[in-house]
Every structure is written in C-alpha cells, then in structure tokens.
Image (cartoon, rainbow, N blue to C red):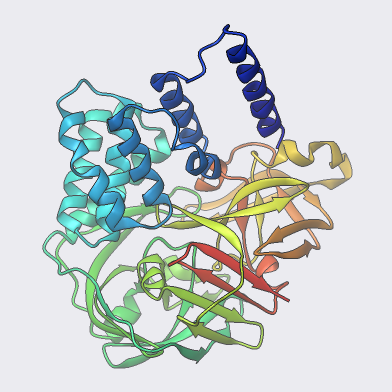
Length: 427
C-alpha cells in the first residue's frame, strides 16, 4: 500500500538524520504509543502486530500486547495481560488507553464465558467513556452488556472435543450452508454463519428443542441498525459431528426476524461454537470437516469482536475484509472505493436495496465486473462486485468490505482455522 511505502521512506530519512546526529536514533516511547494507537483506530491489525515490539513504556507494551492477543483469538493470554493493568489505568484520569483496554477486556471475558465479568466491564466502559465512543461502539457495548447481564449466573460453555469428524451439509434456497446439529436430542439443520456473533435460534426452534429461557430480554440491531428484541436460553447439550458442547448460549428471536425472502432460517451456528471447533473445512461437494488437520499456509486472520477478518489482496492492495459465510454476496466498503475509484464509470452506477426488520434502505453503489481477489493463497474472480462509495453506518465501514459466498464458491474447499488464525483456500 502507498502508506507503507511512505512509512519506509520516512524510516530511511529518520535513519539518515540519526546518522548525522540530527534526529534521535531511538523513537520516544510516547511517539511510538501514539503511532500504535493510530494503527488500532484504523484497524490496521497487520501493522499493529508487526510494530508492538517497538520502544514503549512498560504499561503500554502490556496494553498493546494484550490487544493483539485478543485480535489473534488468544483470549486467555489477553486476559492474563490486561486484567492486572486495569486497576492501574482506572486510578489515573480517563484516557484512550483505559477505553481500549475496557473494550478489549469486556470482549475477552465474553469469549471466555465469564459473563458477569464481561457485563461489569461493559458497565465501567459505558460509565466512563460513553461520550468517547462512536455511535456504533456505544450501541454495541450497550447491547452486549444487556446480553451478558442476562447470562450473569449462567454456567460457562464447555466442549468435549473428540476426534476429527466429517458431516454432510446442505445448501438452503438462499445458497447458504446449513449443517446438521443435535440440540437437546433433537435433530436440526442450522446455518453456519461466520458473520454471526453468537449462535441463535427462532422461537419455534426454541419450543421444539425444549430450550428454557432466562428471565429478561435484550436488544440487538439488524443489518440496518433497527432494534430487534430477543430472549436468551442456555442449551444443556449440542452435538456437531463428534463434538459435544454443554451450556451453549442461545439467543432466541422471532421467526419473522429470520425469515429471509420467504425462507425460514431455524437456527444459526455462530462464533462461540465455531471457535471451539478449532477448524472448519467446507468442501464444494457439501461435506464439512470438523477439526481436520491442515498443513498449507494461508491468509492471516484476526478477530474484530466476534467477527473473523482476513488479509486479502485486491486490486493490487493488501486489505482487511470480514468473512461472512452467512452472506450470499460480497460487498466492498467506502474504504475500498478509493482503491478502484479510477476504474469506475457512470455506467457502473446502480442502486442497492438492503432489507432488515425496519424496512428497506436504498444506497447508491457501483457494480464492477471481473474484480480479482487473492484469499488463502488462491484467486477468486467476481462476476459483479458491489462497491459503496460512502459509509453506510454498519460494521463493514471500518474494513474494506465483507466477503460472502460468491468468493467462497470459487474454491474446491476452504478452511477457517481459529486455532492458528489462518484462512486456507484450495482449488
């Protein structure tokens, strides 16, 4: 990327000045910290990971190491680093350091199924930093706190990870992957959705599997940001292949909220279950491998909250995209727009309709044919890429886009490896 070249030139100039005695050879710790803060705010996770070994004050070194551990799905390590630092930052005046620590630690605790600690950490975040959070950050923290509060006394999810197994999936009428699961002894077919923060079922499914609901309700936002109410239950047992889960959190929403174009989705397998499966391999012939060994090298993965983010080469640039097996098509955000702006013409202008519980939103977009991406070591060429020239107020805005089944369908198989944080594609 251009800014990488500029950074290299700036570094060369710095070294030259240092040799001449005109510039200090070692950067000041505060300067390095501010640079890492910028990388974090811009979600430049590759560069953040590569630069945390720089000259930093001890507490800042721990802070950024903990944040990177969180983004690499090393939750226990992140908690071990950040939890002792929290009281020291709390005793100081409010700062961006404490804000980022609280955001990260609250996420860590939710992923570790320490629901009470997560709820309490979100409460501190909202109490001290509500005005410093963006609208989306504030809404997300508020919603997550309410969800964690419902689960406050619930037991943590545990897993019996047995031998690797293979299951036979199916494609629903939307073209999305549904896998067989056994919930409380009932055979079900639920969507495999890497874009889902948590597993979820409809009210009808909850009744069918005998799910006991906890007291109270919470809210989340649909694709358009419209509030959707839900209850929460804890499923005693869930089987996927030869893997058995206990005490799985299952938010429950109305059937209508999961009726897409007339097709009723009954349940979704989301991040907390997927991550515990370690590795998920999807084959073009419909098989899904659970925890199969892999040897190939692939694209680096990060986590942004509960969403997997992959390093992708697109239009000659290395970009970060969210991976969403629950999306039929890919979308490219306003961050990607400048990368291909010179190739777009008026003939490519179109209107995009985004449907949600609150109705349909209309966006001006460009439709670009033949866009090539390299993901997991393999190329995928899109018949049509939807590019948004302006932010749309969703989580996609902070990355270069969201990749869906039109990309994944280009591969004979692909593996999402949550243990080694890589995405591997095969043709």
